[in-house]
Amino acid sequence: MATDFKTAQPAEYYRQFLKQDVRPDGRELGEIRSTILNVGSITTADGSALVKLGNTTVICGIKAEFTTPKAEEPKQGFIVPNVDLPPLCSSSFKPGPPSEQAQVVSQLIADVIESAKVVDLETLCIQEEKLCWVLFCDMMCLDYDGNIADACMIALIAALKNVMLPSVSIDSDTGLATVSDTKTEALNVKAHPVATTFAVFDDTIIIADPTNEEETMVTGMVTLVVNEDNQLCAVHKPGGSPLSAEQLQDCINRAITRANEVRQLIDETGSSVDR
Image (cartoon, rainbow, N blue to C red; front, side, top):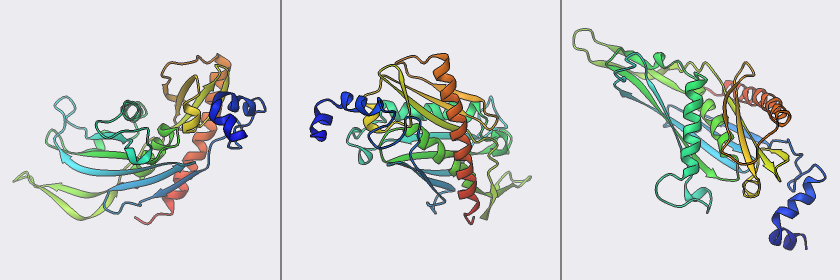
């Protein structure tokens, strides 16, 4: 009977739970799903991490390559994030060019990397105007069950902290680069921003960490990215129901708590990995 009710009137089915300050999966409205992190799982990458947020699973692999610095930024390297939502993670996604959602999350992460100054890009420069590192950060969703932005952000930061690069020396006479056989230089990750996504149901009820099913029924969403100083370094709200000042402050407080939990998880997991 409950299954029929859910199929026929999914929104009303949810309302019956939300009236009791609980969700169908048993979580409280502001409760985040369990988060599992594994670091260094891709041995062929220069850094990697796998995150499981509830059933949403994302793997991030980072590959470092040589390139020439931009003319306007001759002392800096690059970080290029890319989010992939392939058909294998959900039937909602089709083969072909990146979906709009994948592009939006990729841009959000690129903005956060820049605004939070996650890595000092000058440390990626090997020789001014001539040679630098570019870090291709590919995040692939293996199983999609909502809230892809939060999972990707965790995977990215954990993978960046796992990056090891070989030392590079430049011959002053020939200008040729010599790369060491072993990777001995860890990437200096200066900031650890954490994203927390909230959804608005029926224009008034705020829930944290929405599942795929919940995302299809909510009337608005907002992603808050918090840095180590408990300051917002990014806010992404693609339209939908507005939040009152009180609601927004409550979300910020929850995001700060969540950010501290995630940073602790990243530190504990990363410290247990042999490089």
